[in-house]
Length: 168
Image 1 (tube, rainbow, N blue to C red):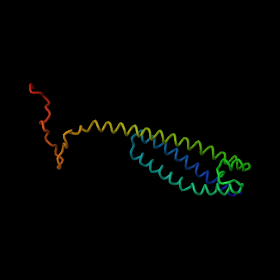
Image 2 (cartoon, helix red, strand yellow):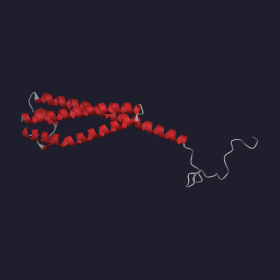
Image 3 (cartoon, one colour):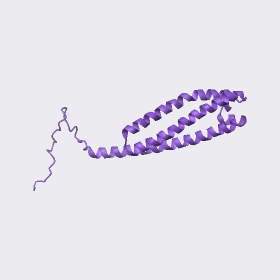
């Protein structure tokens, strides 16, 4: 059983390191977004995507070891959780598992908070940029297209708008 618990601790340590990297990259993503550094932002997004794929790939192996440990302690299917295992293992394993459980929980909460903050900032920025761009683009002609197939501006039905009125 010690071998399985050592394996579980190793897998949890790998996941903790990955999630701490997610936090660091999410912080850097926020800095890049606030600096409007598109290249850095794309790099951070790619890094987060890679980390998410790695985390997803690691779940199956971790769940299998948790199931083996839980079965070894006579726990049923519903009790194949880290919390249930912690209640049944002896020291020093229980302390090590509690450490990973607490650190992973705190790291995931921090990661979630950073991602939500970054997402809110980017949505606000996108909205402001969209508003600014819409002010720069002239309003569309309510009577139809303003340009012909060659990209030339069509003459307005009432002529060009006058800068000066008839009196000059």
